[in-house]
Each structure stands twice: as structure tokens, then as C-alpha cells.
Image (cartoon, rainbow, N blue to C red; front, side):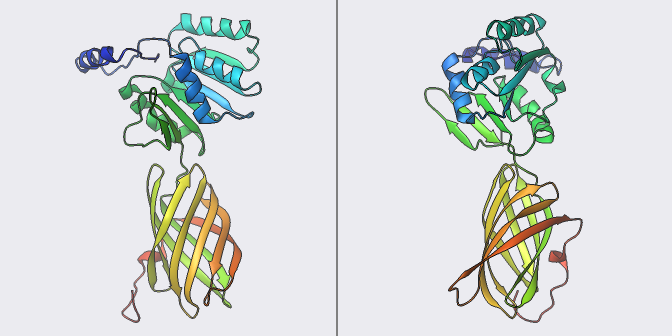
Amino acid sequence: MKKPGITLLLSFVLAAGAAQAQERFSPFVPSDQSNVERMLKLAQLRDDDVVVDLGSGDGRIVLTAARMNKKLRGWGVDIDEKLVMESNAAARARGVSDRVQFFHLNAFDADLSQATVIAMWLWPEFQLLLRPMILAQARPGTRVITNLWDLGSWRPDEEELEPQRVCLWIVPARVAGYWSWELSFGGRQVSYSAVNEQRFQVVEGMVRSGNRREVLQDMKLRGEEISFTLLMTIENVGFVRHAFRGKVRGDIIVGTASVSLPPHEKTLELQWRARLQAESDYFAPTGTAGIQ
């Protein structure tokens, strides 16, 4: 669970690992200090951050974070007890042991629920095996930073390629499923039923209002923040332009809807509250009257 270094070593270790048991282990090679600082700068450290290093080695990622920001807290885990003891000694020597700790623990057993920044520099397969743990435990908006290796089909939200690749991911909220909401405008209350499909931070959505269906456009999900637009003809109102922006709070989304009604001379700013549902009116029979 410690950091890899020489790229040439990778092919040897992976080839050997194929013939071994399913246990995974990353030999320790200290992270390059300049890349550590690049990773942490990409995370844009904040005073209230809790920085967690999975496979902390000599502790330099968390210790560097504590130096770069005098208020944040952090901890690391490693299966090498000697390195853990040395890292805690370094924290005491630097006067940050009240904010920084290291634990003799397997990375798969770490509790990530309070982390706001998660750092890794492990073999690619090891990082991929930790991906489900991060997505299941870390809160939406948690930043994940790595050096050199990526997280498979979960594409980074940001990356720097030179002089060596460092990447940043934002843990996305879960927005897949059936959502419904209502808006009042044009002298009536309008109901919407949406179906969202999600692959990490990439979201596609379709919505129904009355007997019309449209695609949700420009969908963006960054942590708990979601936004999209909708161009749709509303019965007895006409062609309406919608722009939604909100924050995901579990099974609800709370935010605003900017609605432009014909003849589109002004925009209404409405409160928007969507709820996750077990079933959706999107699939109700449509009938042959009218279009769509």
C-alpha cells in the first residue's frame, strides 16, 4: 500500500502478481516532493480539509499538506508499522502531531466518511480496487488526487500532464434514477418527471411534462452541484426555456429554476425542489393525441 516509483519495475511486479494470490501490495518508494506539492495544489487545500493518504509511506503527503495549510487536519494509513512509527515521529518533530496522525491499517479498512481530500500513489490495479471504497464512503465533493496513475474509466475532472501526470477527481453525488418536481408559472402548476442515467460524473437525463418528452441538455455534475437546461413546450403555456441549478442532498435536490416564458421578455427565478422516486410517470401511457 506504499508508493510506487520506477516505471520499469511495474511490468515485472504486475507479471509476477498474475501468478500469485489475490493479495495486493505496493512496494514503498518515496514520492517526488515536487509532485506531492503539485497534487496538493491541484486539490486547492482549505482550512477545514481532512487530508487522507491511503498508503502513506513516510507520511510526506499529509505532512506537506499540513505545512501548506496551517489549519487543516490529516491522517494516513500504511501496512508497514515501522513507516507508521517514523511518520508519527516526523509529525511530532514538525509540531503538527495535534493535526496529523498515521495509523497501522490496511487501506481497505480506512473510514473515508470524513475525508475531504484523498491522496493515493499506488500501483494502478491497487488504485482501481480502492475506487469502489471511495465512491461508496466518501461524501460528494471529496477531492481525490493521484500521481501518475489514474482510476480506470472514471476520468479525472482535472489533470496536469507535465512534468509528470497528476490528476484530480471530484466524488460525484448519486443522481441516477427517477426524479420529480413541480413549478408554478403561467397561471398553472407544471409537473415534471425525469429519468437520469449516470456514469461517475457524466449524467444524461430525459424528462416528461404532460404528454411531451425532452432531453435535458448541458447536464453538469461536480460533487453535489448539478445544473442543466430544458427547452420544452408546456401545455397551455407555450415554448418555455428552463435553466436548473441546485445541490444534491441525498434523495432531494434543492436549488433554483430560471424560467423564460413566451414571448421571452423576462425570466422568472423560482425555487426548485426535486425528489427521488421509486417509480416515474415518465413511463405512463402517452396516447395518440398531440405530438410526442
